[in-house]
Amino acid sequence: MFSKIIRFFDTLRRFWNETYSEVVKKAIWPKPRELFQYTLVVCVAVIILTSIIFLFDFSLMNLIQFLTELVGA
Image (cartoon, rainbow, N blue to C red; front, side, top):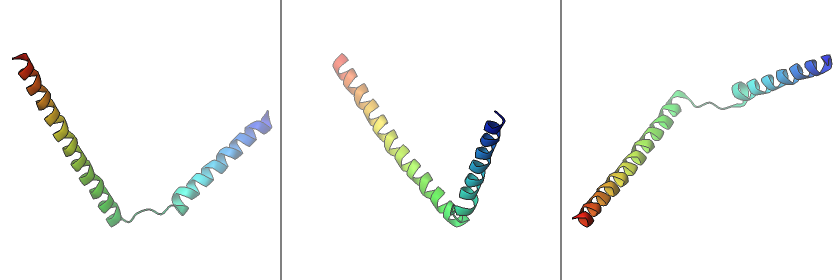
């Protein structure tokens, strides 16, 4: 029983050490200028896609409203 507990904490310690090593030492983090550029690209892409979806939604809504009024008249 005691050996299982020790093994569990040893596994937990090894996991933490590997995770820390991966995040801090092995990962390549972007420089502030690159981070700003990437963020800007994502924001522009979100704005463009949102605009396209809005236009399609607005157009279809008006088309359906027009057709239902045309049929109902």
